[in-house]
Amino acid sequence: MAPHPDARSHLSPLPRPSELCRFPATALARMIAERQVSASEVVAAYLDRIDEVNGTVNAIVSLRSRGQILAEAKAADAAQAAGVRPGPLHGLPIAIKDLAQTKGLRTTFGSRIFADFVPEEDSYFVSRMRDAGAIIIGKTNVPEFGFGSQTYNDVFGATRNAFDPRLSSGGSSGGAAVALALHMVPLADGSDLCGSLRNPAGWNNVFGFRTSPGRVAAGPSTELYLSQMSVEGPMARSVADLALLLGVQAGYDPRSPLSLDGDFRSSAEKRKEMPWRIAWLGDLGGHLPMEDGVLDACESALRGAEAGSFRIEPVIPDFDYEGLWEAFVMLRHASSGMSLKIHYDDAQQRELLKPEAIWEIEGGLSLTAPQIYAASTVRSAWYKTVLSLFERYDLLALPTAQVFAFDAELHWPAEIAGRGMDSYHRWMEVTALATMAGCPAIAVPAGFDVSGRSMGIQLIGRPRADAEVLSAAASYEQVCGIKAGA
Image (cartoon, rainbow, N blue to C red; front, side):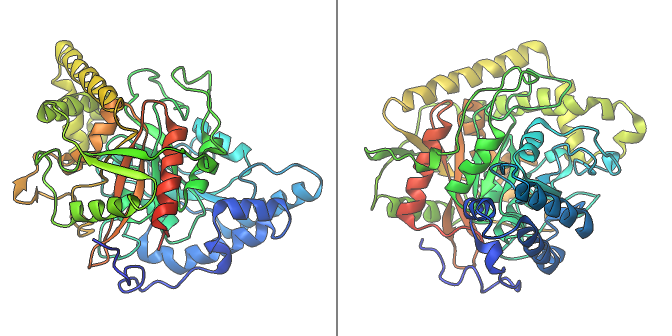
């Protein structure tokens, strides 16, 4: 399916962004560093853009006052004028996903329990972004505690799709993807357990990168070892911009014992000389129900990539995918569900939890140690299967979602292609494969259907091969002539 020629404009009533807001983040950072433009000018342009469009889509929340933000931008300009060497994000306005802590700025996790919570410290990667010169202007909206790939909550309401405000933005990084696609921010952060960086990227025509576990140091947290299925990562309108932000986010932190070393600032400039061999997993031989048009969109995009440096081969690995999903659900119960038990145990707070959160908690409470161990052995077997695939292929490919963006008022689809969904996240099963393998996976745009709904492709790389995945995405971006955003 070719991208619809009018997909960027025939549905959205929103005005086009100003020239400054259309520059890539890499270009803006260079222009500020070379004093071609000031941080104050850049920040003012983005704040004007937020005033223009955020009321329609509700992507940015807890926005600081214009005066506070511009004062910080002015201070950044003064420091540069005084000879302070600008960091890689110097003067760039960024809104942080509302699941990450921001010192002195309200962080709600999309929950009424934390509606007025103001952290006393940053999440570790947020601190790194501040140190690199980013100006934190506010937060981006999320579903409650990140549960569900549809961004709505009882604190701020729903976030709307960048191309059609009647539709869902995806989630849980829905606010980040929409703010990025509509040029309200030059870069965005996100997190991902069950597709939260990948699904909203696909539905809003941007790039989202689920990094390797530990690539971006996690914390602060009371639990440092078990919650390794969830990772932090960047979102951007180009692969070079992804690499810019990841170069800041990534790195070892002794407070996060499973964190890794790594510098990715130049990864997008690397190129692999030999063709990229891609195993196209599709719908796993019919195991995954798909809305009509999803596979067509992805396969059309991959055929376009074959005109360049990509070689595509359909593959269905031999595995018990139902058992893999059951293991994923158990491990999510045991980690994400149990992390909220403290609120479930408080009768007043329990009343403020959405049904999906209670389902996760009660699922965790029902598990036994042998069940959790058995789920981990299934995950281990899947990892070995994926390793064997990488003996023949450089990347695995799947859609970023099993459906196109649906009505923003719908919490989650009850069925796909006539098949019932047995949980609030079963429709996102396609994203669990990379999570369970612990592999880096990047969402790249695949184009639009005739209704103007966008779809993405997951490119899954070898364990810890984040730089290689970025390189592959940069090649795809170039070959397919991707123009991300709205």
